[in-house]
Image (cartoon, rainbow, N blue to C red):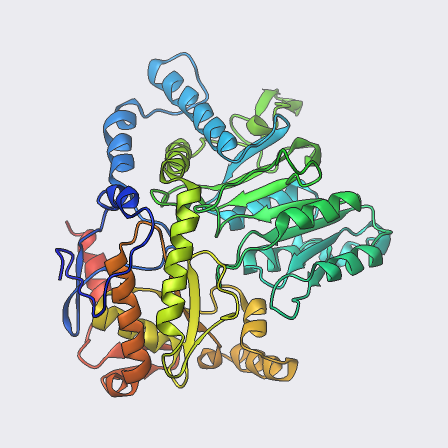
Length: 504
């Protein structure tokens, strides 16, 4: 057992770049933390990276000690603090642009708290949303409606948001391997060749399985057909190199990207990021008019706005600290080195597959595809996913996530749910019974995790998969919330911790 409280049952594997990533691991806030569970004090082992990153001490110290004394509103270059913060805000924007190889015509907008806000903002910029209360008054000719192609692997944010626009949404089906069927995209492009606007909005990587999509190939097909391609990098953004304008593929540029920097190491507390080519900006007035967007107003209603999109779409006091934090998280990613990140993650994934493939009753979703980033979702025969998550937490301190990972459509493919079963599930959920909701346990790995942690997690998963029936007797199921609690938990220990934070 090491000083983190983690012990492993088998030989520790040799993972690439251990020394490189160890230097970053020691600076993660919460490393070597312990939590109290019904089975005693357990090491906190964070394996929920795809949901959110972790705080990084050097970034927090930089914000506190260097940035903190200079905090002031932007929108001025006259006062010392205001000028410093304004310059830093612009520098942060440029750091992120360089990191993704944005071009001179690409604009960056910080939006909300993640990719969900970014994609919805972009849909409004494209003019695809209308006031819901006026929905019945719109009658758009079919040939004027854009078509949006999405994959079967999308997060809800890149699926349902498009369904609420004026666009016609087409789902690119899966091929026999469960991957994106590019030949089907060819068929769909031919079907919709009469449409003026053709968009593909695709995930860079599934947040359920870690499987990447061929987004550059999709971009090339879209551009040759007179369309454009947007990519959701919320899941893969913290790990892979992002290149909006790949030099060796002149038809594969990305017209827009969406990012959730809160998923980066050091990223919690950052805004969503939208980067797009300015030619897609179609608004006559800003999406959110307000302070900082206006060049002139008078008492008689005359008013005008800045022409610069990054100014006119940044109304009100911007989240300057949030964007500065995002820029530092992108710089940290470059220090981690995406090449080393991907190689180490692949080694971790292969090790986990080898350890889990023979565990009785355990099923890795899309288990025929090992080439993926560090997301492994699985089911265990007879085990409710939320009980599995609770057992990993209580017995081992391991933090994972249960449910459908906000990817219900992909879940239908992964769990082989036909339309009849789907309709039955929907009917029961609509009637208030969420206990029927399908799901899985999602484990997400990060290169800063140690080899000991990987072994510890594999041991723990094997234990609960084999022995969960003996542990289940200690738990009570709550149908209304679809959750489990240990019999000894009269009050939520997590609620007590959160409550104490606001008393200190």
